[in-house]
Length: 437
Ligand code: GDP
Ligand code: GDP
Image (cartoon, rainbow, N blue to C red; front, top):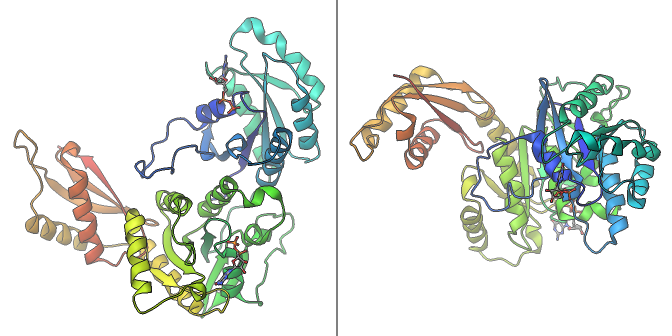
């Protein structure tokens, strides 16, 4: 689960996002229709020679109202805070600029491996332009061309050569990994304190593990939980930490390491576009989810208010119709105790495995109740057999006569039937169709 993180830094227009997109390749998203979920992506997974890593495009993190120089300095700091390896991109056509030197100086202080990419070296003749970048003092410059895809192999070889020295250990314990996600100020930090109280134990006896130090372990009624990235939630003060893009980035990192995500909404303010965006990432990542509406103490309410808010959530988060909702106050700790049972419930659903025989009985029944569709030529969808191929999230493969015939609406129908037959509260489920003749 723990992969190294590579951050790309550099001035605007040197080609960071071009290179970022080259490295992550084309990856299709499940919730493409959800506005804002995949647009301006700044965090993704890349792979080279079988080694996977996370990659951050810090250029996508705009820090509003800050002068340009300060912005790139902060992006460099984010890279230092978040990444194991830093890739600095410069523009080979412009030569070394003052801003490059500025960024390089910040990075040097970090004592993290830095790989220097000189971009826009579109042909062989231009290769001599890279030597002046030695003056940045951050190592050998690698010539690349983002737009032509040249030289990337050598850079990625260099990047992954640092992986072995990173000492990133695998997470082996079987506690439920939980993250609190949500935009700034919804109350994540207050809620984490309310949930785990003061008896929290930060487990970091193991030397040199920076990752454990940011988590909090907690046991309730014999169940072990790891609250992921609690240090990140509590951390305060740096200018960039309150920016929206940075909070999306943090959510990405936390979601990646979780079994269960707690989406925290602000009951006082209602639902915002950014809530949907963060929720979309968790959904796409296939994590179990509980929706917690916080600050309920501050809401003026009558007997209908909760119901209305719930309807609003269902309307705004159509793709999260499976997630249970609870209303709490971190401030008064009222109803905070409802959260643990919900974590347990959705975690069980997330890991649920159903027997093939039962699954196929449900499929046969479902098809009897609502026959499979035909296409224009009269060709009918045939589902021969279904089987669950994995858990977390539960993933089913259906063998069919023609995958083209499985329409979204019928898939949705089957998903609902599976949800009725087996308890999948709080987890997305995936249905994959595979052709068999
Ligand atoms: P970012 O601001 O650093 O993310 O830069 P972009 O990736 O948006 O690229 C800035 C501009 O440089 C765009 O017009 C790209 O098409 C162009 N560009 C990116 N890579 C290359 C390259 O290798 N060669 C050339 N000639 N142009 C490039
Ligand atoms: P975070 O940025 O999501 O971690 O949010 P914080 O936990 O820092 O909370 C942001 C603000 O909301 C702080 O001023 C908190 O005191 C306040 N707050 C948090 N939870 C509650 C709550 O349940 N009720 C009320 N009224 N205020 C809250």
